Image (cartoon, rainbow, N blue to C red; front, side, top):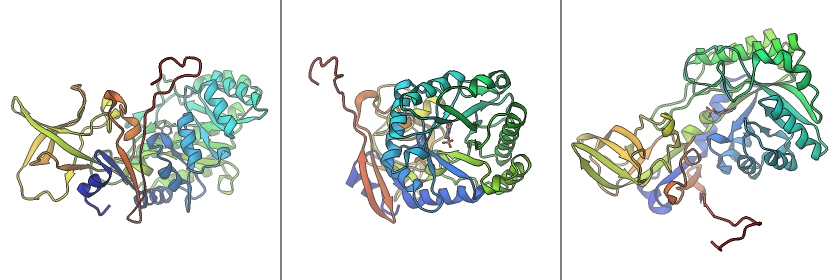
Length: 416
Ligand SMILES: Cc1ncc(COP(=O)(O)O)c(C=O)c1O
């Protein structure tokens, strides 16, 4: 992204996300290199459902398949050109309506999180006269790693508790219009620690083998999830995971001989690792004020633009750079806040910034994942930020999400 942030915001407005597809392809190459070449790699659209990013990930060498968790993400994946039959539909709260939408579009692979979820998939599949291939998402009894965002080894809405599976197998294997084809694990997110990641994958692989051997669960497809880390709103690079490929191969050779020749399909999933580094957020200083000895820099981007995740404590600390700022100029500490009428609208506290003035454009690095759509986008009814996609230094797409209130067919009510 050689253009300055000021040039870009002048052309497309502020706040502005810029995604660089060259960087995105680099991230995919890096992740592919860390994994055995036979692996299927799913792009999890929850990280960023922008169709142009998804399209770039679904094309070319190392192409990903799409993992979606809503009809909206499905629409984005289809728009991006992913064949429906290869899309994996996941999530703990699938409704009958969305299952109909998915099946109607030709989706045939689902991860199910309970027997009731599986039965719901079966009933929907019956309507379409098809059989849905289902992965059983498993919530392991114990967690191998202790770091990162945990989703297993605890009580959770995700997955079927491992210890209950034995009693459930007869029911799970006899739901009409479904075929259990394997297992799905997603035990943790954002693990920079390679050893934790490896331990978790080893545990998932061993558990899958045990489910196959002891319970007779089919295991043609094994999705061992992800947990690949990426910096978020701070400078830095993605971890390389030097040992991962070898450790995965060893664990699979041990538990799934024949996997190298396609005897079982092995998959991983990633959102943030693939898209986090390709995006930057440009935001303009609209006002600066002091209050009781503290400096507040008010930006046109708040938690409505970046940082729905801030509410989960995942955003801070954030870091910004300012094009053309004098490197020798004095720096100061300020709170970077957004335009919303809530004290919660804070992008960063005690952020080290150069002396700023109104109109300065700040750049938040590594903002390609969990940005726009993970934010409180419509809070205070401000417009969504513009999103620009760049490839080979050229702008290839520029768009903005729009919110439109529409009357429901049964209740036309007042015209909007
Ligand atoms: C089932 C599942 N797959 C994929 C992801 C994407 O995670 P990440 O963006 O950390 O790669 C998540 C995130 O929570 C998830 O729950």
